[in-house]
Amino acid sequence: MTGESSNESANALPVHVGIIMDGNGRWASSRGLPRTAGHKEGLNAAKRIIAAAAKLSIPYVTLYTFSTENWKRAETEVGYLMSLIKLHLRAEFAFYKKNGIRILHIGDISGLPAEIRNEIQKAKEETASFTGTTCVLAINYGSRDEIVRGVRSLAEKVSRGEISPAQIDDEKISHSLDEGGLPNVDLMIRTGGEKRLSNFLLWQCAYAEFVFSDTLWPDYTEEEFLSSLTEFSHRNRRFGGVPKTQGNGV
Image (cartoon, rainbow, N blue to C red; front, side, top):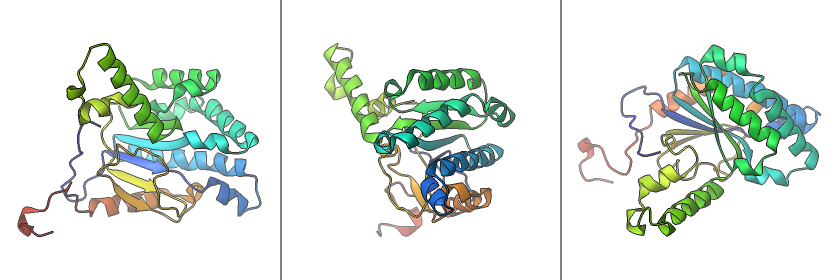
């Protein structure tokens, strides 16, 4: 998160992909199934896409797994999602190992049940040495909450005299966020037909490219993921500037 990723070469792959995995509930409802069935199928889609990213050696993929707003859902659905996270975090160790996937977490871990906190920590520890794609799980995550927590940590450093207010800059704010060493998001993908960020990685997406898909997440395929990457490779990323060949035009 300490700088803008450079991606100027033709057919370049993103360093960091964020994915809003939308449409699990609608997928299930359209088939006359409970919403929980959509979440279970969504997990299979997540594994499919992470495996594809690993094959392409994409360094980072962040998945919007459970937001701070998701607690507002029905108690039965929230309970199922928590169970799904708990059961599969370490149960997928063979999958992580086969694909060299390292697990990280962003979000307010203190707001999660103790058993979920333990599973997250164990998954991070057990995959820490893996050198392939880093899969960042956003669990109990909201970008505004993340920024507030980061700013509070900086305020505490100021109050202790460790830094002065004048020393607070983009880099210090970036490093105050969850897993502050992550690069900025290059490509943000959202499935399910909606076209908004929904409080996901707001700071990190300052210069991200966006690709929106009408496909419901459980139906999202490796082929569509590759198509999104191809579209990204054709984008002209100027980061506020203009190509030299265009002079001073807008």
